[in-house]
Image 1 (tube, helix red, strand yellow):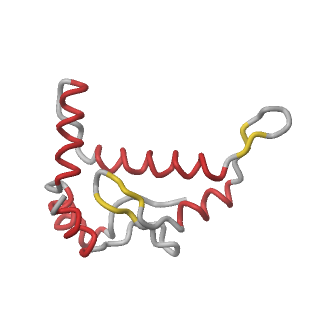
Image 2 (cartoon, rainbow, N blue to C red):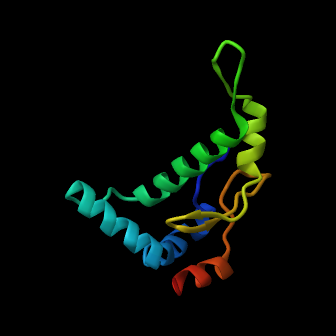
Amino acid sequence: MFDRTIVDDNGFDLWYASVSTLPSDLAWREAYRHEFGSAPADFADLYYDAAGLLIRTLDRVSTIDGGHDLVINRDDLASAVRSTTNYRGVSCTIAIDASTGNRIDDPVALSRCAVG
């Protein structure tokens, strides 16, 4: 469906250094520490965003059939995830590249997220 909620490996280190200092990311880390008594694992913010994006999308595309069973059309799910734009995650606004399934590197969004 999507490969990851990070940018291409070539720019990852610099990109994640910016993401991990965003007010939303720092607030999420603090809330996590408060809730669980320890700091989150490395990249937990990205996993959190991936799970949230997937759950939101599942909620939109899944149905309940006549027998009360959950039905998830995998093609619909993949298409919906890969067409994601403007998903508000703790690691800033997420858009997924439909051709690669990777997160789109968006410096403008990061600069907007940096000011809170």
